[in-house]
Image (cartoon, rainbow, N blue to C red; front, side, top):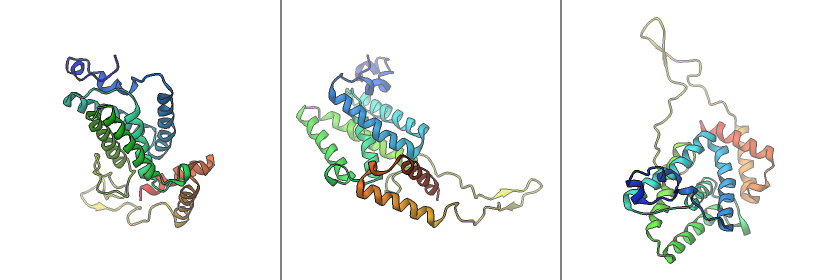
Length: 229
């Protein structure tokens, strides 16, 4: 009842567009996939916030679901969502080291490559399309939520936010005046930047797990503070 059967969706069972990631076989690989989604999803949630991360997960279900319906590609299982979330984390923090000192971006490329080869081996080449649709959707959502800033070629879905330093009108006339914040520097210092650089260097050298709970909280706080720059 949860699987994305394109014919059934076109027949009126539209819930399948949302529910196909929930249709998983109960085996050890499903457990590992969900565990990875939880771990790296938790890190992304700290970066973008709970509501925005929830919207990202919704988009990762709906967009590939609609594409699968249009192209008559059936789909089930949470693995494409997990791979997309993992890749966003690795691209946002490419210098983080995993097993054997492998950089995150290399690890993500290997994971995607293995998944593509498996789908080809299972004669499910059409699902490769949905895999890359998931990756593109995750990239667009992450870019729109303030991540992946080092990749300006990735388009943003949402328009630019209004600057808090916009000029305002006086109540008594048409003259435009600048607020007290006009021309001021953002509310952060070079000390904040230095502290953030130190935390990122530690992650790059020893991995995310090397940070304590307080250091991870501080990393999230500094990231949000400096992202508005």
